[in-house]
Image 1 (cartoon, rainbow, N blue to C red):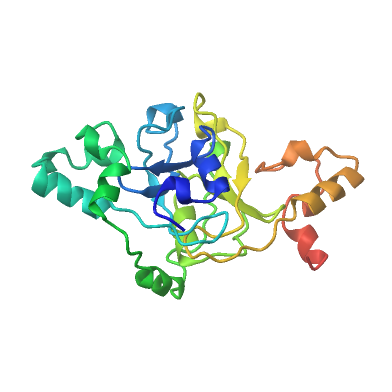
Image 2 (cartoon, rainbow, N blue to C red):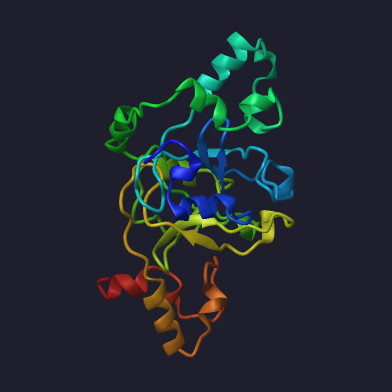
Length: 261
């Protein structure tokens, strides 16, 4: 896989370009991030605009969540060195990490690091070592009053060190849905606060932090069983807590565990 965004998978490029998917790419430092959104503030006002032109504050990824291929790696340190040593602009730190419009125009795109040959060698050693380490934090669903930030009560089947760190903060827009056994990025309306938005995701089959192929999605099987009960699966595409009156086994992982799926 190449170094530029245009070299990455179609699925990743499409997700990055979609203003409603909480996934962004910073061309100036080659960083792919899961958006980190605060409650009480419109997403478009916290570095997550419709155009995604400004940089999005978030958690960096190491692997393509759609193919499992190792991403080229962020160049935050390299960019800081150029800003500080060559441009004498270290006084702008950390603002230029949060807004791509701060700093010289010549460093707002991929071109500056491509021309310098920065980051052509991808170092994976540290990341693969991290895969062998236990989860950094225990799983805590920490139910909040704001439904748009509620995690599910069940710990994800895949719970590596990276996932444990991301799910430890409700503001990180990466979610696990136990009833469909899916992991993915929140689908967000930039014009509405996240606080009361429905929890819907763009599923991704690979872990962005260890590259593991995740357990297969059971959305199709789940929808079939829901319809067989005379219910509408659209009411629970990605909702927590589930609608009142629904069979409990269909709102958790119980149904597919009982069936041995």
